[in-house]
Length: 139
Image (cartoon, rainbow, N blue to C red; front, side):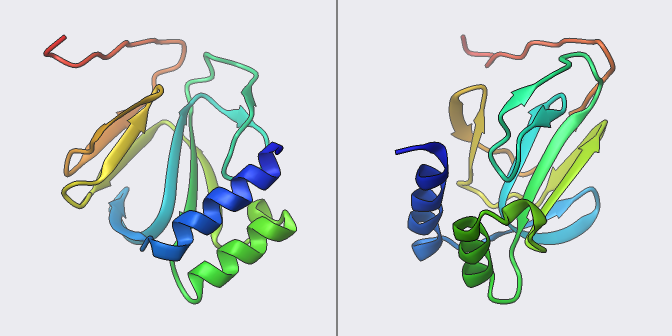
């Protein structure tokens, strides 16, 4: 099917029923459809980054799709036309620190191919050329 078609179909399915999450990101309240935080800077366009060049750059790759005025229509139009990265509903940043609060109870969090319930708040920090490995306490 190809990644572009798969991304458009997945977005259409989610946008039919989903509502954006109201989160506090680094102290600012934001409505978001999607928040991606990657370990190190990714290359690739849009909300689906493709590859990383440097695994020790000390940065978090943050990509967000905003909720807002006519969000479903704007988001689907941008995805269909291949303009998501240039759309006002999409934002990217490279940060060393990210704090997310106000995560609604029952929200899923995906990390390293695993899915779990998100805590009410979380902090992500990045140190240049450092690696910490996390695992659940009950394993």
